[in-house]
Length: 115
Image 1: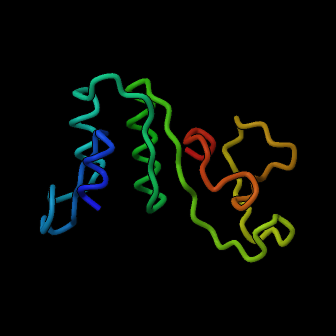
Image 2 (image 1 turned 120 degrees about the horizontal axis):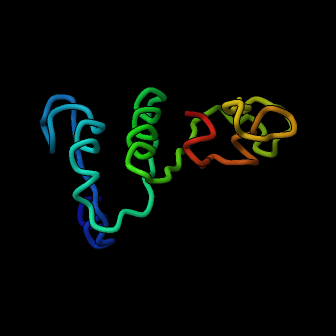
């Protein structure tokens, strides 16, 4: 996948817990260090563990960037009927029901919806 990503000509960073490939440590450490070095950053995208995504959204926000998160939930029906994939956004987000359905409303959302 490395060659495919490089062909996109986008900024990307790789980290592993043990340093077997790329940076040894958390990807949020790299993001904190490198975000101001990126020329004309547009948006930060993230997927992964909740705590990591929260930190990525915070780093983006602190640097004046928008972010998008890909939320992972179980989606039983895929059409929003079963309510198995509902997520509660932060209070500042206006949603009539108070909840978002990952399968119908997402799974990609603005980062500020949840963090």
